Length: 605
Image 1 (cartoon, helix red, strand yellow):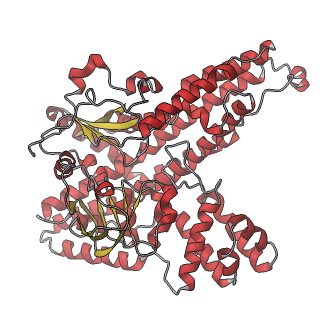
Image 2: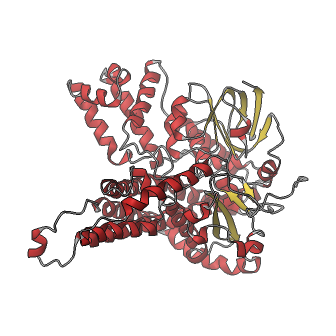
Image 3: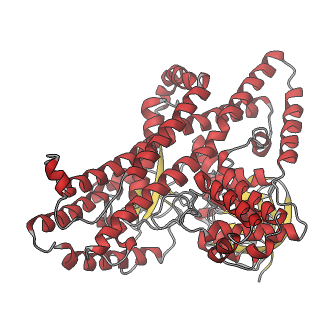
């Protein structure tokens, strides 16, 4: 470790001016409590900006709470993963910090046979169980879609009287809100049903390779499972197909010279246009249930509701095709490299028994690996897209009732507080008197907005407290790219350097101009041939990879989305640099060596 051996304590890290009292925005168990200071300061917490790069509005914290709790229960209570329990987490200044919970070394051996039996059943019945998983998730989506929120009527419908229902619409509104929250919780349980096993199978293969082939690069192991078709890439593939269809049907002028609404209207005027429109509509279900963010925020924009987002990507693809460029992912080349490197390492194993073990572990890793990416589409994108849409529908009821001014205002309240708003609304309606909310809630929204805005004005600290001398927890290494080296880099982040070190996430070396992106809304500024530099990418950024030369991220390991997607698109990537997005400025000329995990600033803009 460096001369600076630990990070600041969260108890000593103050909130920015204007954010006083921020703790009240979140449940008590999600913030650091003063009476637990001695306990909490003995844990190492790191900021999970890979999944949650922005300050959370109070309601949005629901998704974090459900996700981390459900992740943990599978590790700790269902699979009994030998070295890893759940993940403790806290909010500090509006950001999420995580602390993996290790298993007592004396208990690890006892967990191994239990894990083998439990996980083994899933591995042996993977396809059937996964088919059932798809049905379960689609069932939740259908249930959420069936929920509707409407203004309370002037009087109860006469048919309700004749049917002797004996209930009123406020009962159904409260019931449906609770049901929507319940379905969100349910779908997050499904999210982790297979995910942790997907990582476990890969990590088992990873450990076998490290032992069998001393010195094997992490990147070489990752290449052996690359090139597997996954549903997460389907939205981007649909856009490329639509771009090719526009060229084929000679509709390129319609696409390039119009915004989405004008283009769709003009398409109606020709047979070729109607063929394209049919393909456009077919692609939307389900593949446009895709967000430009990551699904954890109520402010995320989903393609299905913002058709300009996918249409603009199609525009870029059409322009590339007209310039004679190949817009397809290099699937064949990636598959060929996968087979080449697999054969090379397998042939170096002299023992038939060891070869058989290699084949078995690699085979399992390839079977389960697609889920590691696919779950994102079905949960974060599709399921959460419906969830946020239904919540906005509820919010519009409160806007019309005068409780709040804008749809987004509802998300400044915790999920249990919204039950109070619902009861206040129903109470006033039932009594024939004004609800209290319109005279109280707007001021409270304004107060909370100021707090969230103040919190958002300051970047989060990368970590708190004393890190372990050596980081060995496999998920932390593989998914987040948090290594002893990256922690060292964070500790010395005040030191300036033109060289950054990170994970060798996707091979190749390129030079080019950097474009620093801090949110999905800035993706349109990316220019052809630039290098994307960001804190973290989202899986849905795939369509921009046709423009860029390489990717550099602050956080993320070998199995992060940025690493996986870049390997599948054949782009160099260095992940887990710790500080690239602040050390590098837009316009800097940089060199990215994705084979060795090195980034160098060659010329400052």
